Image 1 (tube, rainbow, N blue to C red):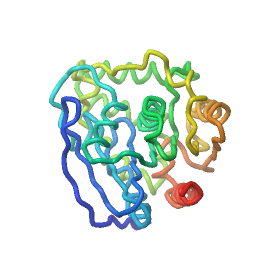
Image 2: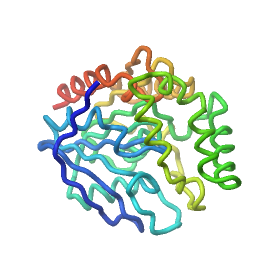
Image 3: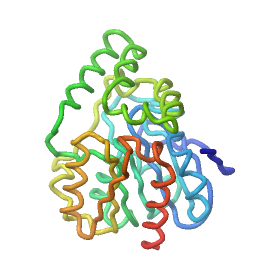
Length: 272
């Protein structure tokens, strides 16, 4: 599949003691894409141009990722960073799409900032405050320990080999781009010592406070944790709809861009 990246403007904003890199393309209602752990803006290459045909699309590198430059090891919140980015770019309200860690970010943001999300699309997303179903928290903990004891390269070897990525690694559409992006991850979030600020009351307990149109997407082959989270979101967010992408795993937007883009554009068209 050939991906066409549109002309875009890029820059940095100073947010909560860090500098976040961002790219903007298109015009219209703002739509923000938030990537997953160890990834960056490039994971949205197959969506950036398509969505920019009808929206003002913003994608950015989260703290510690890609071209963003951490300037502090103070405790931080990805949700607060997203709010800071929107404020710096004078975006009052936006459609929010986030995958995995990015899904957690947009869920927390929507709970924390009523009225600022136009719609919500968590993709292969965990649910903050939900008990794990598999051993993925333990595996990530061992990978973080490896990063601090043996270096980021060794940790990334473990991370890339984790079953979380198996469907994407075995998919010719996603394997190359995914490997390139993940292998360039700095590991800052694993090795800097900076801690993530958790909400006093996790989003899992506050799903009924979300009132915006919500589409929950999960790959058929993703880990059970993410299917359970998707079911909980569909059951507890008023009007939420869950869609499973057949044959895709955790990186569903990269593994089956055509199916993913159809889902997103049809959903957003209905919201608009």
